[in-house]
Length: 235
Image (tube, rainbow, N blue to C red; front, side, top):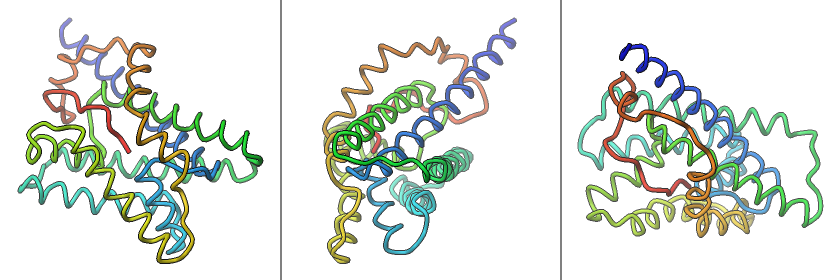
């Protein structure tokens, strides 16, 4: 009976994880389509995409791979099977953003009002997805793992400073590429809203979306699990 319950909880956890990555990718794609600024890592991906001709999703995958390597260097060890799961999650996230952007090609988002609504709705979708993703707590995107490592290994638990540093990196990348090319993309209203308000939005969805998951049962399965939840801070 206990094993059956564990299996049920794992199935629920995987379902919610899939829902969160679909919703997260959709929200990010919507902010890209609205062209009023995206979350910092996505903004960096947009500027890399514009400079290289890569898709936004592929640019984010490259950024994620670099960050994954940096995470292990900062951790001073390879994270084993957890790195593999994190890489697969990162890959799925990047490809899903491209999938949603492909579906949105024929959709016109014109005018400041409509673009603002689309941008804010996209940020809310991201917040809802992150609320689910952090509570399921089966994998970590390398971007989130970077914040966790900085917070726990270098900044004595200071999540605010860890967030500023981890989000400052993609902002610097995006700004540098945009200013060098005299064509700054992806850093605007949506970036400010994401940076300043994402944590509050996530807390709201924590109360609004009920997952009914048994974390103890999930922690005993094969997917990687970290002892406590990462603070609300996704880019």
